[in-house]
Image 1 (tube, rainbow, N blue to C red):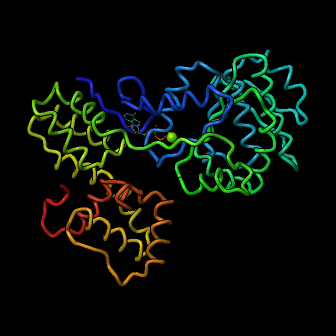
Image 2 (cartoon, rainbow, N blue to C red):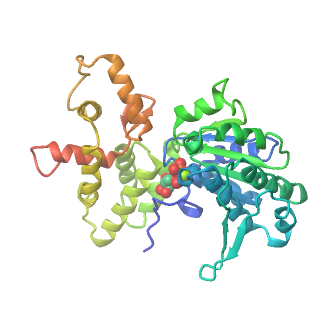
Image 3 (tube, helix red, strand yellow):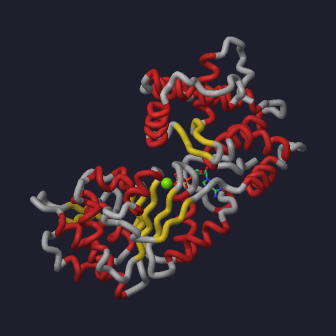
Length: 366
Ligand SMILES: Nc1ncnc2c1ncn2[C@@H]1O[C@H](COP(=O)(O)OP(=O)(O)O)[C@@H](O)[C@H]1O
Ligand SMILES: [Mg+2]
């Protein structure tokens, strides 16, 4: 039987649920003259959503994750590679001739893709400008291209002047829509909402929330129903454990489905234990990378969430507490929900509890 759940990579087709309103909103923005700024915590479904929009719109799309980019020249190179992958060489050729610094383009006989590079220069700005202007020129002649920058909050860590340079180039363009995605809300808001920032109000802001409870529940129920009579109760328990987080929900559902395929008597408890054992080394590394104060605050949040201890440790000054929360939030350890901060990864939570519990096997996860 085919496992109807999927995690880790972008989801589409039957693996993608709901987001009807979100999708309509994104499409409406990128089909206008505006640019889209899409913010959500990591692994909430930004890339999946935009991919779905792009698939519907059938516009030429150039996507790049800024986390992987190491310099301005590298940014221009990666963009040009993607342009040449979707536009026929004949179309781009004419414009390439006008580049101030000529790109070195060769065919990689192994991958059959074009390799692109630029000779080292003192200033990379003309290279970036020529590449972005090429996209604009291609847009003028044909379908309006989309340029999707993922993890855009990294822009200033690539080069301090990159935001300014980028803005000064693309503000002149009329035939391209940009999508700026980011998973660090505070940094993204600083880029797009601080008056002094070059990208101040550069596009329309959209934030992606959790998948609505009823939709996610129906999705899980449908997935489990061929295997299990009481699929509704599985759906409820999974969502309670994962707090509707799109990625962890799909992850737990995927593993539980596989476990049920092997044995009808498999329990969620066993599946959670096997997941945390499998990731033991990663979780240990994460835990050891935290300082003592961070560890204490994380434990406090977990104990409060699981109702194992009530209230906060009043000996920690509020200023220390909130600067630590902010740091842990930006590192992805915490998430800020409606009821305040909590640990992002329910399996990391389970691992911590399992390490610290004296009653084995673990009984406090849910
Ligand atoms: N609409 C959705 N329906 C079901 N699962 C989803 C949906 N969007 C995201 N997910 C789950 O979340 C995971 C991460 O999605 P992704 O699009 O990569 O998020 P992001 O780009 O925000 O990090 C996916 O692998 C999938 O398991
Ligand atoms: Mg993504």
